[in-house]
Amino acid sequence: MPKHLLLIDDDALLVHSLAYTLEQAGYRTTTAGSAWEGLASIEQDPPDLILLDIGLPDMDGLSMLRRIQKDRETPVIFLTARRRELDELLGLELGAEDYITKPFSEDILLARIKTVLRRSERLEMPSPAGALIVAGDLTINPAAHTVTCAGRLVELGPKGFDLLRVLALNSGQVMSVNELLEQVWGAEYVGEPQVVYVHIRWLREKLEEDPSQPRRILTIHGVGYKLAP
Image 1 (cartoon, rainbow, N blue to C red):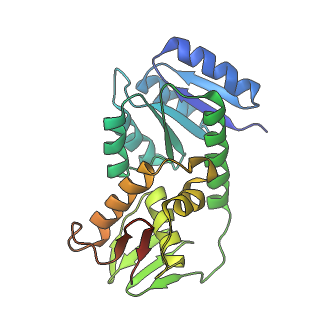
Image 2: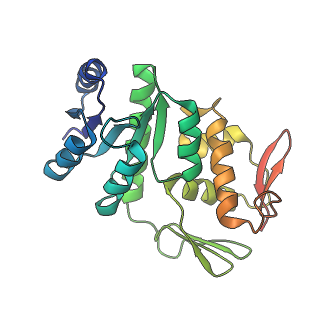
């Protein structure tokens, strides 16, 4: 059965063109021209993945993402034309699986969709029992998707969780930005370091006593990052 994608964007020309491309790629595609139309479509015919424009006229993408996440865990890829807004989005780490900036190559978007769907399928598979990751006073439970730091529960979105998990699995070792991109986002993201920078900043805000003077997630200048438990 083909995966069902929901495209929510008020640019009618883009929607028509992109829907055709997605259907030609083998996806069942539903479209909506507004946030409210998209929310109604989600209720009537739940998608496997949502392509969501941030700048919708009736509701901004952040507010819509919050509404979606209240009831379901459908992966979302943001579509945005604004770099400044993008940085804010990633810093907030509200839970979107990915983003792509307009104008974009349809081949790149299709590759991102495949990556996010594969990741979503892996998350739905049962994890081995007892596969805890412990790094000092940091404990990560992949099966329950929980993180505790010094006994305190820390809430992380999907990408923040995956990034911390990779750093913890390599605790004490320096990970280059490209290694983190490959292992957390996929090889097609190599060369886009900004996505790592903003997620590292966000993790520090969650885990460090003083994010401006980090003691857990260290920057090794010219090399990358490492988790120091």
